[in-house]
Amino acid sequence: MSTMLGPGAGAGPAPGSGIGRGRADVAPMRRPSARTHRDPRPNPAAHPHRAPTPTPAPAATPGPVIPVTFDGTRHAWLVLGYRELHYVLSSPEIFTSDPRNRARRENIPADWAPLPGLGRRPSLLHTDSEDHQRRYQAVNDVLGEVDVFLLRARAEAITDSVIDDFAGLGSADLVASFAHQVPALVLASLCGPDDLDATQIAEDLVDLVDIGADAARGHRQLVARLRDLLAIRLDEPPTEDIISGLIDHPAELTDDEIVEDLAVALGFGMRTVAGWIGNSLRLLLTDGSFALELSGGRRSVMQALTRVLWEDTPLQITAGRWATRDIQLGGQRIRAGEMVALGLAAANSDPRVRRDHASGPPAGCGAAPAHHHDHHNPGGGPARQGTAHHADNAAGASADAAGTGTTSGPNSAHLSFGHGAHRCPFPAQEIAEVITRTAVEVLLDRLPNVRLAVPAGALVWRRTAWNRALTALPVRFSPV
Image 1 (cartoon, one colour):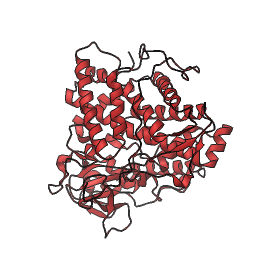
Image 2 (cartoon, helix red, strand yellow):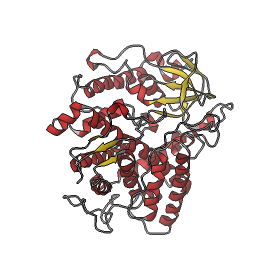
Image 3 (tube, helix red, strand yellow):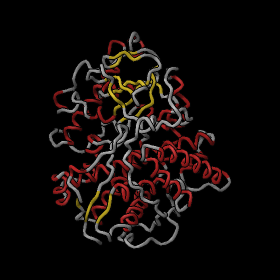
């Protein structure tokens, strides 16, 4: 069986300086231009649908589920509790991803910033049941064919080439010049290395990490670019890239399904990996214990990356679930058609599970649909037990990440990659980890004395509830 990024995937011009160092001879593509982050502080009157932030309703009381508004007008429920969120993600028949189930009164304008996640685009993100499983399996299978060893070699070469652009300057912004560049180029290469269109896809992916007009434009351009590449692949012999893989998959996806599902995979992958790289570098540069133990070889980069997924997960909130019927969740009554936003970051820090796992899970935190106990959670049994087991793992993992628990090694019971039928496919998680870990390790190898150029307290987080990412990460180092 052939694999993605197989023989010949690295064909192209010889790598530039700094790529040798025992790494595979994989030619990087031309890099997209670095974009400095434009701090999205819009005038609400002039831009009523830009950079929406969920705001607790005035009468909201703290709890695992709270009412919020987006842009001050659109009502939703924000799920903050680990177990409540686990229940929502495990119950697609009750909390559907299909926006056709939303309440008629909910009017979402076309220029609303999170529209790629909330609109009625025909992607697997907005399907359920058999149709979703068919398309999800196709994406899972094709990404599973990516050879992670060759992917790592390509990521190393691209990371080296990106660092070459600023290594001689002695200073850089590791967000715009690094955390955005590396994942955009590596992810774009999965669509066909060394293609001009692949470099243009990287440009679109860099636009996607913004939350304003650039993000919407980047999404439109990405979809158009993928459609053009699909047309080319249909007229050519199969090649070892993810577009050809989806064309040939037994699920027999339509052209629209291939384009829309690839746009989802690449878009979410870009936001996740860019934030994961930036947040991990911030942790390593600001946490003294990590810096000392890294230099002494006592704590791995992977442990830092895992801690970030627990404490600074790149995707803080995702939107796009709708109740199919009235239901009681976390002490709140959610009515059919109302939107539910998923508080991934809050669930990871839920105090009910972030404690020493040895004491056992808290009781009575399960959720059950109103008046449907007999069908979905009879007697509060199986569903609650399964959730408790998962939460128990989470408690031990978070304690271990903080250095106070009794478990050993990183634990992945966090919800940063989702859960249930719509979770991020496991091959996609592996690809994200390979890119992130490679980028961080190569940077620390190339610039061993890299340090912050500003006080840690001066670093600014982006003004959005959706993502956790810095506006910039200025550093200094000895020019090389």
